[in-house]
Length: 414
Image: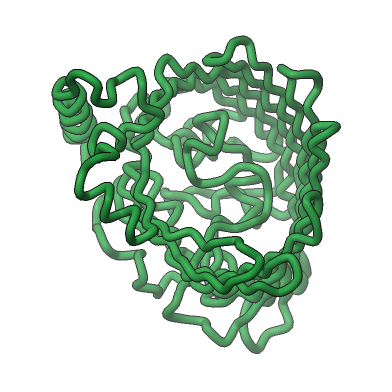
């Protein structure tokens, strides 16, 4: 899909929204009164809204589109090691995202069930497909386009058991609990992602995940994941179902001090038979400083034992975030990162461009940006990012050690 077709898609969607909004009259929801555009598409007093309520279903989604100017002007128009927002000087439809969800009731006195199905069309679909096994057909081959695709990053059932304070269990494919940043665009401050998220962590898992709240401050999570030759990272329902791994985490929060701590990790094997283990842990500490300042510090460390061709491989990183709420509708942010790919085993995987090489290197990145919400359902995220690689020429098709990106994106929530 080329740039012209992308623009047509985005323009068409915006036109539909504008027509819908123009139809709102009188006391009906208006452009400025709704939090999400679905309130205009499906008014609360409509038959469809009643059906959703009776079925305990919730529909939502968003549209995320953006563009990045690359000062290197790379010949292949790829932004080096930056994935997701990976195209230079080209408008991207990153995520046309839809989800349908039935939330479980957390009433401690009754059993409950629910589930969720997520769908994504866009350039980000390449990175959110079940890529743990190249031979998988769950969502890896649904649309054969060079830059655009379709993915179902989540498809799970969820159960609530009234045991103690309540036990929740997910069964299916779900997003990882590891790390700070995530695939879903509205849950990130910046348009681009950290190296630690892109190359050091899984995006999703297939299997089961149990969570239990000890009290209002402490939550425990543990699960078994499969469907991948890579310790249950980004697995699916089709292949490698004998290769099981472990994921788990502890979340602690203190609302009085504005402090939270998340410890998470995974352990598994590269195959069912070979003793080649993949291990990862992540620590995320968050602290509110007064009412307007918010700081986050993340550290990840991963290692592979007895990797083919290499006795072992390891990667680790430190990411710092500082955010300031200038106004209710405007926030400023800073992200600083150091990521070490000690053996050249991680950066470049996943990568849209298979020919992208790699080597042991340190990666440094600094990103500054803003989040502006002129309307509750509309967010603009301009940013400037500067990257340095000291081990190999990771940018401008192997020509440069550094890269400057000036980006902006638009986020519409349904």
